[in-house]
Length: 309
Image (tube, rainbow, N blue to C red; front, side, top):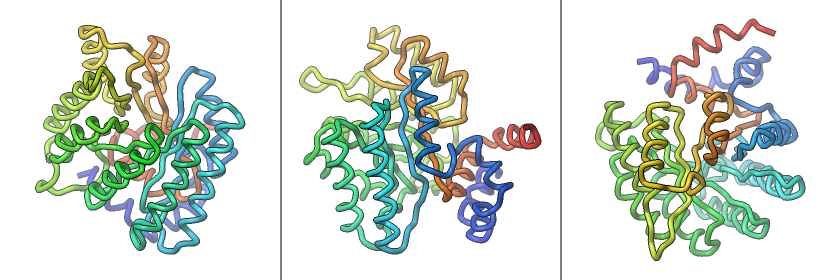
């Protein structure tokens, strides 16, 4: 019930407008959002890099309705790619398609993302096309395939373990050598497209992550991101890697900024690749509410720490 409530709140335009303008809202978001500006995000990236942990930078925003808004979002990403190269940061970028015009002009969105990926390829970097709700799934995968054919190794996407179709989509992308970020899924989906029970999502996640790290075509694997804070799943992966003799750097664990920092550091100290997803920007509200929906225990954490200095 809490999950459904927070997802519903993430779509509340009035509450979003109030929260994003208020100092109280910004203070609440600070646990999971690395500030409002590019410079704050880059500073957070440098701090995380100093601990031997890689980063994916995400300028928050979604569901834009005009081309100027889409181009404004794109400009921030080009700024990030330049800064990553100039500062030699261990980082890449993540972008949502609804942030660059997918809802009103898919061709525009593809042109914008293609320019980002071309920029990333020239800078020896990488663009992750984030996954949104299931209505975007096929279009996101198809666009990733087209761009990967043009810029091999410079673009990948995200698959969500709670969707039934992800079993097939995993094989589809691996066969093309396209990098996958595997997560459980944070959007409200119906039982016609997604597993309703957490146990089934977890079981599917474990099956998919094992398939990703053992995939080989012509002697080559695909570098994938195992995105989870679930320590039981992390432990299953650690055991699986050890038993199968898989290189700890053949994949990476991926986690969110502000969540399970202790686990991030421990895995990095053990020699695993770890990447932290760092979001930033004034349009933080939908992202923040989905983090509370994913793990309602975060509400208690925020309540305990809100009045601390």
